[in-house]
Amino acid sequence: MRTVALLLALCASSLSAEEWRHYGNDPGGTRYSPLNQINRDNVGRLEVAWEYDTPDFTDGLSGSPTRSAFEATPLMIGGVLYVPTPMDRLLALDAATGRLEWEFNPGLDKTRRFNLFTNRGIGYWSQGAAERLVLGTQTGLVYSIDRKTGKLDPAFGVQGVLDTGDTAMEGGVEGQYSITSPISQCKGTLIVGGRVSDGLPAGPNGDIRGYDIHTGQLRWRFHTVPRPGEYGHETWGGDSWKLRGGANLWTMSSVDEELGLVFAPLGSPSYDYYGGDRPGANLFGNSLVALDCRTGSRRWHFQSIHHDIWDWDLPSQPSLVEIVRGGKPVKAVTIATKTGFLFVFDRATGEPLFDIEEHPVPAGDIPGEYYHPTQPKPVLPKPFIRQSMREDEITTVTPESRAECLEMLEGASIEGPLFRPRLKQMTVFFPGTNGGSNYGGGAFDPETDTYYINSMDVGTLASMVPRGADAEVPWRSRAVPQGRFWDSNMYPCQEPPWGHLTAIDLGTGKFRWQSLLGEYDELTKRGIPPTGASNLGGPVVTAGGLVFIAATNDKRMRAFDKDTGELVWEYRLPASAHATPMTYMVDGRQYLAIAVGGGNKYNPGSFMAKVMAFRLASSD
Image (cartoon, rainbow, N blue to C red; front, side, top):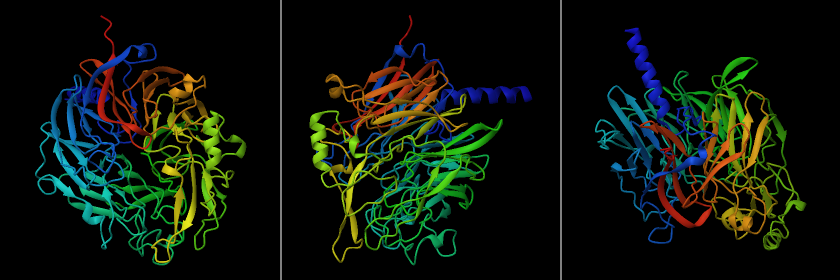
């Protein structure tokens, strides 16, 4: 019997290695694959195996007020690829051929106005013969779907559908509430957050909720803005906690089933850029919170920014990693920030594995604002992005770009440290509101204890301006178009580099290497060396010695040598892919798949929703 059990366990382990069952491959979001059929020696032989086009995209002009962004990472289970489209339609595709097996369409109203039409992925769980896919939608609904048939599970919610909006839209508040990221599950509990509107102080709350995985019954609720008597309530001055929006789990959480913990990265409180009406540090805004999966109780937390007035959410899935410290293995959790810091903690206790220091930061000149006196910075690793600039670093890439940027900067405050606040004067900030790093997050290689993270150096040029006397918020942010510190060609206004892929040794906190990521074809044609480029999406790392990443707004997917940072392969896509790739094995062949969508906030002229899969060309 032991022999049979061992063989079954080995078979299950082998099958799991060939599949991609979670957004980050494993529940801890490491984005590591043990597959090595595609490797340093043969990656140049990659070719397109199949493509699947969906009609679920829009430029926000032709019949729909909202643009699309194909940001999904597919799952592969049992030889089938599962991917949600920007319009929440779930596709089941044969993983070897791309043939459509079935689809589930919740019927998203394309005439509704959202920030973007996007859905980053789905959840998956199995118990005995039951296998379910969990689809969250931009209308706040959660569907439990039979993996093999595409039919709803009638035991869940109301005939397979759960409306989670009732706990987010309380107190008569108005605003948008959506589920745009994969739903994690732990100890039989679905962990549900959501994207909320953050333009006004009052709005949909950011509470994290735990629902029974079988029935959809609410098990617990964690108030991300603590109420009277709860831990952290004193960090909200007066009654500023009431009906407060934001502080939400809009991105991906990670889970440790053994510890029974979910690690949730939270966004900034509302309103994003003014907090005079919410004095104090404002827990649990901008915090990594470890919650008990069964009860929702707080085990520990870390606040990355006290009283955020920059919109520097925690944007990416935490990575649950095991590293060696002092010759001993340590189970850790990492969190990458928009501000370019990587924080590393003991997973069970929250103890920092690299020292974190509180540094004094400057106050601003906005009447009534609360300016927190200090902000945390890790001693190691050092920042992986630009956090400031000097006046002599204004771009010289082209004369036209320099002239345009100088005109934008007339009268602006250019030089200053990280965490300087918005002023009445136009001010340059690094990073911009998208980071730094964003939802793409990083990938971890357990063979070398190395963490790989992509980033962009795109700032913001903005000021604070008064609103009318009757306004709910007396001051608002006014930024240059799109809020980005770049010219009309989307070339950043500071000297390159503008984008990186960085490898960080989590044992020492030191960089192993840092490579340019991305280029602008028109600049290359003018003889200008590659500059790096804006990017959204993330990397994966494999036992084949490769880091695969798309993300950049130059329509490329690339492979880097994981040990040296050398670019060893690139492929020109039909549009930019602002998603994270994944890899899997089926019928003895390894595939690499990516969602290609263009659009988003960095590609105004190209929109699509195409799934592309690559494999090695046959040697026959």
